[in-house]
Figure 1 (cartoon, rainbow, N blue to C red):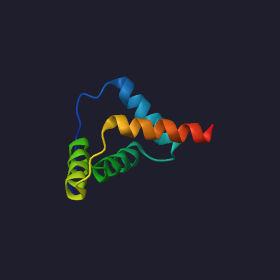
Figure 2: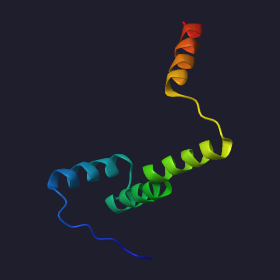
Figure 3: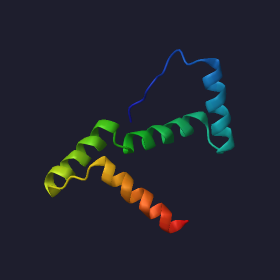
Length: 80
């Protein structure tokens, strides 16, 4: 399994992450490996936006922002 070394981490950052790991009942290495796995599982912003644009293009629909806000405001009136 590959390893990663991160240099020049501030003392404050190290202390905070070590404290979070301890609260989670994990070593710092376990805590950071889990955080990195979760980070790698999430798509980045550009991927999310590209997927959204692709769905809009495939559906051929377009709702102007003003209409979305109007629907939002109308639905909030029903809830109050």
